[in-house]
Image: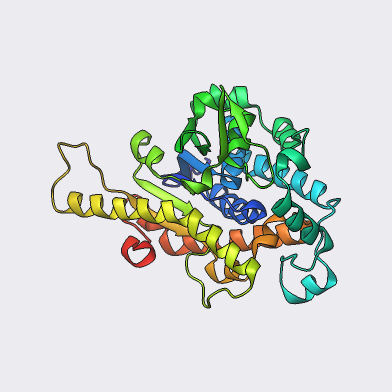
Length: 344
């Protein structure tokens, strides 16, 4: 008689994925480890910029093959990015390789691009509006299949250039242009036009926004995978470091404000006031690598070399594995991250 092994107890979570260019490979590693755990089920995913790409690829994988399908889809996507990155004109110089894991501050290709984008717009530098990731996304993701999906709820965020409003593209709106709009850095790419409206990178208004999860998902557990450091150890002194910190502060600001609002609502609910059931407390969990990310500057976000992306992937897996080992039992019961200590 064959002995029946009980199925592992599954905990349902939502995923919130930050942007950060090639630093999105850290989230790839974190997601790979989460999806490897048969106890994890995903209800919804929200992402911005590189997080939107991870979100769309993961949602497609979950739709066609469950957790293992998501792992396979993410691996195919990032290996396609690596293959293209191996031929990029932006490669770390020998000085860069001596000084850091992934920065390209002394790379001739990075220096040229950085200077050109300060003098010319993408409408001048890239008049045909080529995006290196468009073909990869179209080859890797069946967006029509995502729009029909019942397996996972998907949200990606972009900024409307003309109206100063955030747009959240939901599963039924999903297309390659929505994902590219969420990742449209205005110094590198022309604004993405969708239905007569123009969009830039969603990180300026939500990196990522949490409210689509709050309003549309039953699970109150949000696992936030963070690519951008909140705290740095020394004030930036070089022009590039100052500019990089300005961008990080800008991209983190909306998340910090939303976390304050979540903390306020959590206190109301804990005190017994839920506005007739319209308010619900949220349980927040974080996977990050603050110390390592502090040492990576803006140039590293354009580094798509295989060695760097594989290092980020392994780092993400390690941090996700530590999260599961330390905090899995808290999922569904309590936050593993103190909002007050982390974000207030």
